Amino acid sequence: MSRISRRPKLSFTQKDLDYLIKLSRSRNQAASIIERSKIILLSYQGKNDTEISRELEVDYTTVRKWIKRVLDLGVKEGLIDKPRSGRPQDISAESRAFVISLACMKPKDLGYPHEIWTQRLLAKHIRENCVKEGYPDLSSITQGTISKILNASNIKPHKIEYYVAKVDPEFDQKAANVFATYREANELSEKFKKKKKLNQ
Image (cartoon, rainbow, N blue to C red):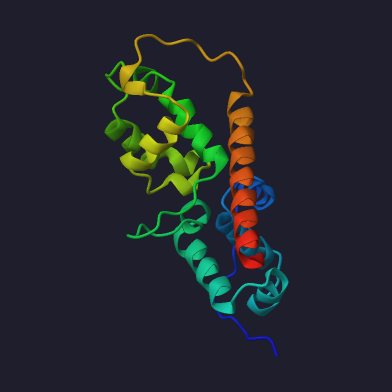
């Protein structure tokens, strides 16, 4: 028997709905963000928590938790984890591309009085703007994580001597695709290693 919920129904603007649909279909966002967006969409479409739990094969309490968070905080802030110590959340390929794209821009072009980024300033800017830009998984990014992302791409914004204008309008998507490919390759490699150990 389905449980009856007495909480308010979800209500969204068209912009919020478009954002949720985009997240739910993303191939680059973290799996946890995609799952949460699907939970919210199914609830908005009228399915109860038990039906959502069965359809997505997630725990009933997980369904309730994320619906309540979105009701309390709104779509963009409600879908992300609260800052916590321990293992950092996964950062999607699109979000990594966003970090790199920002690092390749002049802070002056974004209203700062600086010619080049410091990692502290870049981290602050990303945390303050990532949700509205559509990258909620960057909301608690640290300078150390930014350093790892930029070092992996051999980008050092604090050592830039001059800038070259970005002319490719599809740069962000292409970069995200490259990151996604590397991530998939790493995941396949890990699975292969685990399978090999089991067969020994």
